[in-house]
Image 1: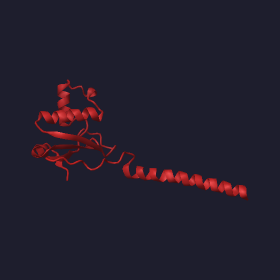
Image 2: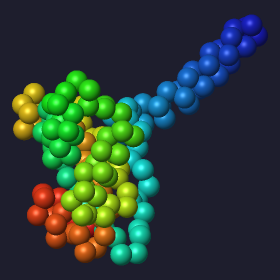
Image 3: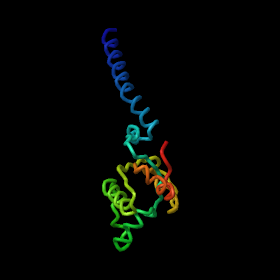
Image 4: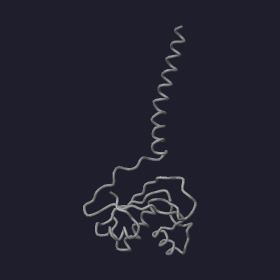
Length: 145
């Protein structure tokens, strides 16, 4: 009987370890869809406010269209990494005279429709000078509460 008891104990420990690792992982995937959780709350800055917009697909956003005009319409060359896109966005709004202090994006959906007018599956957040909020809302952004 003793050898069976030791075997049962090993099985119980193995099951406990597996469940101890698998359940938190399954919970994370269920809650966040396999993506990293959103960052900490957007940081405050005196004299600045966060605004947001849901960009569309097919390089149809103003900063993308501007970049394409400046680069002979070479959509295949438009940068797809966030660091380069962030720079394009900051430059675009700076040329409009809008002071953007920070830019972030939060992915929220992998399954979007195929039309170019459909959302691209993320929210763009820009921290702008308070005096530029009117311009940003006129451009389709909303103030983040």
